[in-house]
Image (tube, rainbow, N blue to C red; front, top):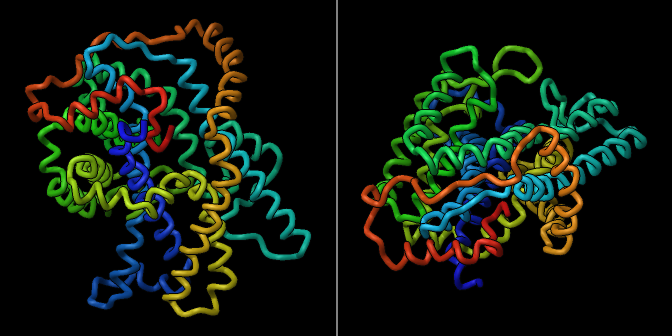
Length: 422
């Protein structure tokens, strides 16, 4: 089985790049030495360039969004590209998504609450990255992904509710792409226009294009779309667009305050397009794929979710204590290495055990009955018929070659395939 799926190892490399970007971003944001450089004008000083480029790591979140759409869509689209008539198991999909996301998330909440309680008992100050409202009601709302106005235990948790809501929409977005790609792209454009120019201004709408572009990237990877040859230069164009749009990009505040603005905003279509091009190029450009398949990147990528869940409080603790007594270089290096070490440890204890087939199967089976009851109550079908492939036709793609045939073969082994988020 490994020989069939080894070419997808680069997806773990992509996830590693995404989580490292976020760690770099928080590493410079939490460092007092870096603060003056955020507002300084452009200059040749290496410190300015380092802080500026590291801060762009915030858009590792955009890359995560694209990877998420890619991983969820790839197996089903591979089967469809074989000409098979395919249906989508709605209840099983939702149960698997909950089993994947929720246990490590709850473990991270419990860990951070335990640390806060110990710090309070010892008379230590609370970490800056930990929310102030830790009441039982606030924790319950976060546990149920009711994130409006949430004062998160960990500020990085804001993306999880968005992901869960996308999971609910994903089967229907995939059906739309399969049945009418033009309508799918029209909806994508409508999300961009609606978010930026109407009152339909929600973070879910503004970030959804990245997730939708991940679905497109999965299909273009399977068919070896001719755009793949131009993905790297297109990424540079999208990067320039992202920088040009940064002064105008914003997100609604979760607390009803003025909009969040700045380089870190995840509703900038330029960064979403750049992430899309990067994912497409990674699957087609041989040297880039080999780079992403380096064992060290794959090891980080496998644990990227666990690292993401705990990295920010670790960096905050370092910056507020040990990092104060170090020069900039060891300060930053220490925060990154400590975040990675702590995240890898957390992942091995609280994430990877739930990926074992036996444990995950048990959770999915336990979730089956309540999910089936909810579907029955709402009058929803248990399966969604996707029909046969009507996705963008072959004339828009590169000629069929051996590499493309290997990708189509994944449809025969879709059950065991691991795509980084599975």
